[in-house]
Image (tube, rainbow, N blue to C red):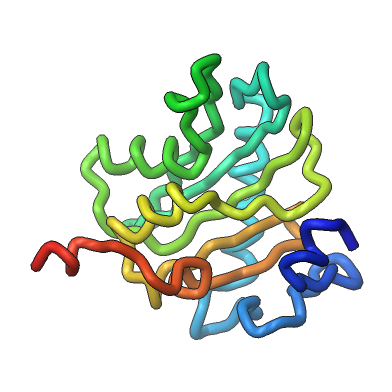
Length: 172
């Protein structure tokens, strides 16, 4: 178990395809999204790893976003020497989709690792979770955090961001 997992009390999956055995992880089912869709999104996200621009950290991330209209938008992280302008893979995918008129989303898969080699689960950062909250129903949007197509965790956004600032806070 890595030090970070110990701090968060997140158990390590025992075998490929096994979901994290704690309250947040959900098995794919009719009430969530299918294993086949999860694997397809992970495969698309994985294709984005070599596209990442990560000359400073060497940590490459890929994302694949599924819209309600069944389109997939991909993204990669893009670093900047000034750091603040850096954008994560998840936001790249969302901004591409939104810029093309999409406003309803079903799920996103995220995969990443040093030099494009996934070795652990890469969860969306807080800023990305907040962007997701802007456009998604927190109880119906799924976040797939993967190491491979066979080894992933599935969460609802409200489990990863239990308290968010949303358009509802502004009376919308």
